[in-house]
Amino acid sequence: MGHRQTGDGQAAFIAIDWGTSSFRAWLMAADGTPLAERRGEEGMRHCATAGFETVFRRHIAALGGEGLPTIICGMAGARQGWREAPYLETPTRLDALHAGAVRVDIDGDVRILPGVAQASSAEPDVMRGEETQILGSIEPGFTGLVCIPGTHSKWVVIEDGAITAFTTYMTGELFALVAEQSVVSLALDKEVGATPDSQAFSAGLGTAESGDAALTSSLFRIRSAMLLGFANKGDGAARLSGLLIGTEMADALRRYGRQKPVRLIATGSLAALYEAALAHAGFISTTADAELASRRGLARVALALWNKGS
Amino acid sequence: MGHRQTGDGQAAFIAIDWGTSSFRAWLMAADGTPLAERRGEEGMRHCATAGFETVFRRHIAALGGEGLPTIICGMAGARQGWREAPYLETPTRLDALHAGAVRVDIDGDVRILPGVAQASSAEPDVMRGEETQILGSIEPGFTGLVCIPGTHSKWVVIEDGAITAFTTYMTGELFALVAEQSVVSLALDKEVGATPDSQAFSAGLGTAESGDAALTSSLFRIRSAMLLGFANKGDGAARLSGLLIGTEMADALRRYGRQKPVRLIATGSLAALYEAALAHAGFISTTADAELASRRGLARVALALWNKGS
Image (cartoon, rainbow over the protein chains, first blue to last red):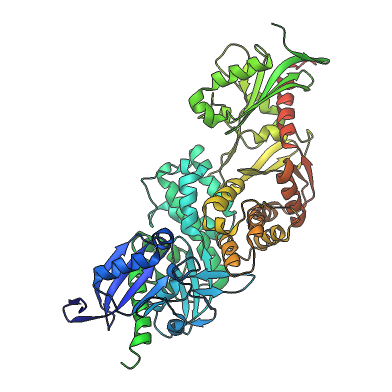
């Protein structure tokens, strides 16, 4: 039952990024080169009914990866996931993530990585999956900020390779709810998304960063501006996006100032919007690809777990 | 076809509060005493298909009020309403509202009151219906603030009986979207609402007023606090309500300080929550009943329109 080979690569392990609504798996060489890939929509939500093991076995078989050691990050380790991997608490070194992995009760060596918790009653916060993306996209002794936009955007403080504090913003989730279901939906053209160079996006960023209005009133003004002829529907999504992303920027500026370098972990149009927003707020940032970050982080963990001598 | 009489009251006019999702009509004596009432859910949204005139005629017939002069406030005067009543622009005197009423093209004297717009490109805002509630609940020369909580809460600056500026907050609409459809719904017990004396409500107010965290992060922390054992589901709605109402309070404090008296126009549990929030923020407030406010405002307009000599 020899494992699939591609070119010079001998399959050594399986890496899986198992989120709330997505599943991605790679057949990996020992040096972290991906040899084959599977993608699906069988995230945690789907697996609650379909069963995690069934989904896991089908994808592993399709990759020809039965019996290989497997490392998993993301919501599969949540309490409602496949097997709970208890949170590591801040401060936590990224190069010690692998030590917190828990084994799944199944044949073979299948491990799920822990998330990270900020167990502070004043600012409680949690992440699952982002810690692995961070591990995969920073240098070992990195000090600075990491920004990971999405449904629940994360801003993470890294000191010499350790997560010391972080904050989650419901940016993507609120964008979807407000754009699709609130009165603001009447002031948006659903066909026209936000673009990083649009005036409406910049104006939204500026309003949020100025602190001159509460977010809950700025959101309503998207609708009022259209009713009163100050704005058109084509600008609505850009304004909304600017207000919500600008809220993150303003909070990060207040907490950290502009001194620390920012590593942005994002892809595509979201990366472009955040690059523009970071520049608008005066941050110095570099961008790392989000998917590459997950795969590289999983590879680093695999190396630590199974190739200690090499 | 004599009009209905109750006790000493001779029916003189009809007053209608026609909102987005509700319809209320009263048969009124000349002195503003209500003689009979109709309530329904045929708001603007319903009437877009059912037809405003059909709904109107059915309720007027049931009141025995055919042919009486009729004054209407609310969304029936919106562009998508029965007949558009163009906004009056701030500053606008409340005792001149009646002069902006437009007549509906129908037999008899049926008029719809205008809304009020703040036609500023920096802070555009609109109201329809609240101006009538304000007219019905303040003294003619009132100077101070009016707070009208709801789906779209209003804070209105009144100077010597004129609306000079106002701000809308999407408080009620965001509460419903976040409580029912976001990740925060997992941290709420749907059976347990917010109560004004709960510690979680006060804590939410305090967080919002301190300005120490962006709203979009405070909302997510409701979920994190539950996951990490710092909070239970029974407190979720109170915390969410405190954060959103506290956002209004913080913005009002920043804009106006605590010096001006606040007239709260609200009813029931919402009135109790806002009374507690206003006190928490250090405002001095008095409460006027919301429904009474609409009816009294409509009566004042009717008096100005049809009883000038009396």
